[in-house]
Amino acid sequence: MAMRTVVSVAAVVALGVVVGCGGRERGRPIADGGPGDAGRSDAGTDAGADAGVDAGTNTDAGTDAGTDAGTDAGTDAGTDAGTDAGTDAGTATDAGTDAGTATDAGTDASAGDAGPPGWSSLGSSGPAGRHHPGMTWDSTRGAVVMFGGFGAARYTSDTWEHDGSGWTEVATTTSPPPRAQPGFVFDSGRDVVVMFGGTSDSGRRGDTWEYDGTDWTEVTTSTSPSARRSLGMAYDASRGVTVMFGGDSGSSLADTWEYDGTDWTQVFPATSPSPRAVFGMTYDPVSERVVLFGGSTGSSSASDETWTYDGATWSLVSTTTTPPPRGNVALAPWPSRGGVAMFGGYDWSGSANLGDTWLYVAGTWTELTLGPSPAPRWGNGLATLGDDVLLFSGYDTTYIDDTWLLE
Image (cartoon, rainbow, N blue to C red; front, side):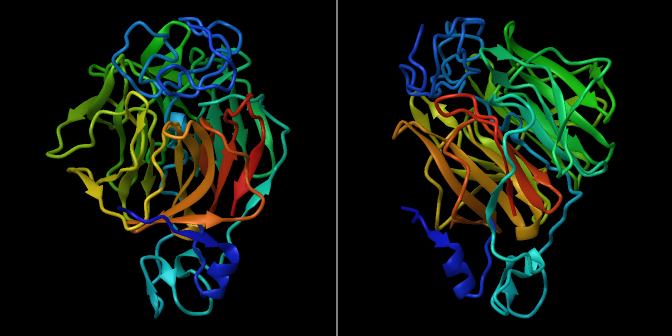
């Protein structure tokens, strides 16, 4: 069994290694194990409705468009969060370094003397609280872009940007319909945000949209994945394509698609993760691989698997230390630490919201103990911001509206 390692900041520094890193009651799990909030109707219009966080019995077609079994609340709704390669944070070749971990001078060579990792609260000034927005890092314009989510018993369609100093709402001429749990990435080759799918009052969506920093444009493609929510999307900068995997279309999916800016193409790797939804997925610019973790794989069941995709096949990664199983979780590249950050999620086995921070570097997961940190939650957005990672929103017992920076 994989072991779980917890590393405190003090220990990191002492070791000379910086590792960065039907109705229901509000806040109670729904019948088959997923986190839910107050009374929810099929279209997701009841007060307190939640954008879908069922534990993953993905075969119950009679459940709501936003919370049907197996639809757990979204992956990385976005959570793809800043998959552009614009932040490369590569590993150093300095003597004594390996896989991004230095053994000299008490610093991580890949981090560029970044200092000890830690969370900083940026307050609650900005967008209203929500869960499962789309969120990603636009490296060309130097801003995190956020769209939609589910909050205050409704799906939203607002567009926001965070430039490191605060949030600004963007008034666009055209806007996609309201939704939560979409796939959401930045295509650095074409300088546009790409969004696919999600869930709304009308059910699961199968539309493709692009945002150029000024306005949204719906893209008509000759081929398209099926409508779905809780999918994973990541922009593979080394190959110049957006990669999509899985999600929920009424049952969990295990298909892989690629989008080149013109059309969607289904690809058929020799190996692939099992069907799942509400997992975390992003692109690691250091290894040049898509990284996937966790997700809902069945009724009240979540995965602790780590998978990578190199453009040809998916590979299951054997890790000595493994985060606990979870869904409704987000991943994002963490350039200053040379790896991928993960925060929070929902643990169906313990019926608990999670508040742990993890760093994935070169096939190794490390849990970080960082002092003041965001409260436990699921469905938050997570995106690269420069060399760091920005966290916004999520759900615990209410819709959360705080913003945090992981340095």
